[in-house]
Length: 203
Length: 245
Image (cartoon, rainbow over all chains, first blue to last red; front, side):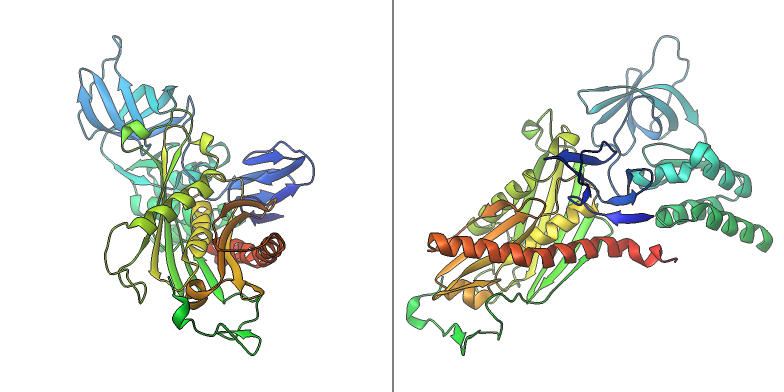
C-alpha cells in the first residue's frame, strides 16, 4: 500500500533507518514529500532537486570553452567542468550535446566530468530529476520499451536531460512526458505499453 | 496603529465583529502547485487574505560572499502588493515592516529546512500578499511551508502559523484587520506540529503568564486543522491521478 506523505509525518514510533527520513527522539519522520511504501520501508520523493553523485551518467550542453576546459550546462546550480586530458582526442564547440559521467565533486558545488562523448544531432528535453529513475525503469526496461516502439535512440541523464535521435521522436517525447506526469500511479509500465501499442496500430 | 479614541466595539453580544467565537478561525483554503515556473508554490485564502508563495532553488548563491560552504542559505521576501489593503501600502518596494517580517520568516524556515543537505546553495522564498486583512505573516508562513514541501526541499517539519491575542479579558484566535489594529494584544506565532516547537513569536500589547499559556494552547489546538489543510493541499496535487487518471 503506497500513500502520500509530507515532511514531518511520523513513519514509525521507533528508530528506523530509511531513505529520505530522519530520526529524532526515538521516532522516525519523513523529511520530504513522497510516496511511502509500507512493505519496502522507504520513501520515493515526488519532487525535488537533483543531487549529483560520483559516477552518475549525465547529459549536458557545452556552454563555454577555454584552453580545453569546457563548462557544461547540466541544470545544476554549481559549475560543471569537463577537462580534456592528454589522451583524449575529442574537442567540442559551444552548443554541443555531450554524455559524460561524474568523476568528482569538488567543494560540493563544482562537478568534474570524465569519459565524455559527443551526441550528434537529435534533440534534448528536460524531465523532473525526481522522475528520472522512473523514466529509466528497473534495469532500463522503461527506456528500452520506448526506444523499441518509437525506434528512437534515447539517452537519459541522471540530471534530468534526455537526448533522443531518429525514429518517432514525438511519440518518445509523449511517452516520457506521460511517465513524468503519472509516475506515482501504480501500473505505469502497463499504461505506457498500452499507449505505445495503440500508437503503433494507429500508424 | 489604531488610536484608542475611535476604538470600535470589538465584542458584540459575546461574539466578535465578524460573528465568530473567540476560538473560531476564519475559513481558509490552500492550493499547492499553482505556478508553473516556480519549483514550488502555494496560494492561500485565509478570510480576506489572499497570498501567493513561491519557492525557487536550490540555486547559485548571489552575491557570492553570502555563500556558506557547508549549508544552504535561505532568502525570504515578504511583500505587500500596492493594492493589497486600504491603508498605506501604496508604495512598491520593501519598507521597514516588510524587511522585518521577511527576516523573522527567514528564521522560521532556517529552523525547519535541512540546510546541510544543500551545501553552497540558496533557497528563495517569496511571499506576495495580494490582499491583506490581518494575520498576513501567519498566512504567509503557512503558505510558504506548503510551497517548500511542494518544491521537494527536505524539511524536518511542515510549520504553520496563526495569530492569537487578547480582546479585553478574552483570549481570541486569528485576528482580522480591525481586531489586529484595536485589540489589547496581538501575538502571531509559528509552530512546528511535530513537537509543538515555537519557531516565531512576536507580541504587541500585553499578556500575563496565564494568558500566554492559554493563547499558546489555543494556537496549538487550531494548528491541527491548519496542518490537515496543508497536507490535503499537498496530496491533492497528485490525488486526481491516484484513483486512476
